[in-house]
Length: 212
Image (cartoon, rainbow, N blue to C red; front, side, top):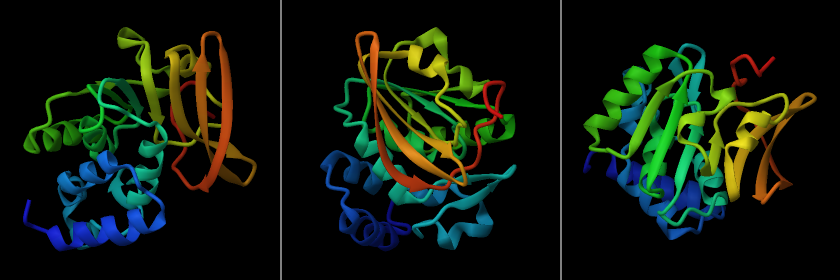
């Protein structure tokens, strides 16, 4: 944990706290999760830059600020079951593992899922379950979820994900809107849903049978 400690502390202070990330539990998760273990060797020196980095297969690890912003918006208390769509490197799942009771994460690309599983084992995380499959369908076997986070941009919000959201649950995801994308925060109350539009973002497209 001492490796890259200074870089990690600077990231937290200048890229997260300075930009409005105030949730103490979120900040603590970013302090204890070693982002450099989740990036390829050729971008290791940029592991704590506030930018997305390529991880292979045309996929990226999201910039730390966006991960923190999305996770903070879910207002996790530690008791939740969370669904993550798009495991990627496993970094966001690792952050979530410190904030929720259990994390289910879905990845369509098998080599990424295997690499993420290995990294999570190395970091000692045991409450993340990785599933192979089409994330646009969610993971109905373990539904409902108190929170859902989607790490790829959908053309529209998949109904299957809304259906798997628990009552009073929250879902955050990027949604394509013409030439750009916007983060949306959805809340469920009984059978009704509300939507809040947040900030513009840039994510890789959501792949799967319910995506374009």
